[in-house]
Amino acid sequence: MMQSAPFNYRRIIIWIGRIVLGGIFIYAGISKIFFPNHMLWPFFMLKFSVATNLANFGIQVESYRLLPAAGVAFVTYTLPFAEVSLGLLLLIGWRVHIWATLVTLLLLGFLTGVTRAYLLHMDINCGCFATPEPVSLKKILEDSSMAVLAALMTVFAFQEARRPHSWSAPAKPST
Amino acid sequence: MHQLLDTPTQQAAQPQVLLQPSPAESVGMPAAHPLIPPVITVAKAAPGLPQATISVGGVNDIDPAKAFGSKNAPIIMEIFTDFQCPACKQLFTTTTQKVMDNYVNTGKVYLILRDYPLPMHAYSRLAASYARAAAHIGRGEEVEQAIFQSQEKWEMTGDIPGAVAAALSAAEMKKVQALVEAKTFEPLIEKDKHLGQLVPVNQTPYTVLHTKSGQTFPVVGFVSYDYLKPFLDQLIAQK
Image 1 (cartoon, rainbow over the protein chains, first blue to last red):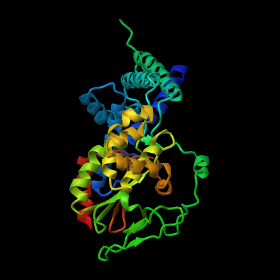
Image 2: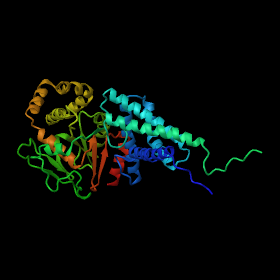
Image 3: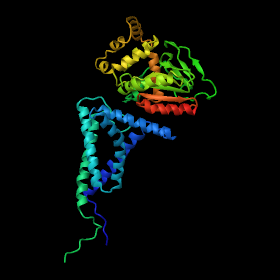
Image 4: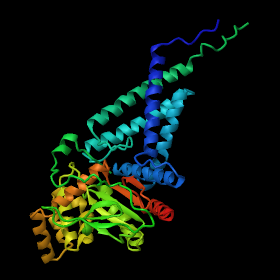
């Protein structure tokens, strides 16, 4: 009889990570693209809104004073879409270990940037979502918790990826 | 961009005496029919208000010293600004200047500059007072430019008079100083702030575009001229 994969603590962490971080990443990406300006119709307004929202996000990226102009432009126009894609891929659950690794690296990058800005007393918005949020200790704790969850998810996803799936056919006994 | 950090308690504590809007008063109220010329009304100065405000195309409480362009323009553009906010500086020194040259001076846009000093910024209210006073002696643009250009300096020291003095003659500076000390234009700044709360402005800069057909389009945060231009052209073409 075919057996379903048993739930263990590793799989529970992976599930929590996929749902929580997948949801947060999708929301973060969408909010950067479509908010705070959300005129979606007709097309020229949608185009204007998206361009303006991304330009505002660009100002927030630039305010960290970490990247040259080309780097700021690259992050501005790729990060929101990457966040949506990674969020979706985590939720879909296909090759989780790969996307979990990327999410962990991104979160560690965010955590570094936010911590640096906080330690330098920079009066900037974190640029995490559409609503401006000042860089604060609370923000660092939030980013740290997400990074820890992402790291655990990554480690467990790699361990799970090495194990044969319980539905896969048993190896043929050698003759 | 800067977030509004007013709590409801703080908002309630702000002076409201001169600022009670009439039932018809709202920033986004519909304008007149496109074929009917805009109604321009001049309100009598209320006791305590230094000067009458005007209404253009359904937008009320405009300080004429802080408004530019033709009152018959197809687009009315209101910008809520905080002088200590970096994105406002960027908007003023890049986009607004170009809008002024290409749309306001050509009669396509009527531009209204509103003050929206955020409580989180220690000196933005004082900067707004100086800019308003300078506007009333006819030197608003130069002084706003000077205040924004030296933002990084005075936000550390609070030396706004120093920044303003660089743009004015000694006699003009004396007049401006006297107006600021007498708090002559504080009610107008409060009025702008109150209108912003009605929008509601939740971060600065915050732009509201009004068309002749009565549509309003809020634009939150900085917007570059390259993006704003096609948008304005489309709105003007729609009239």
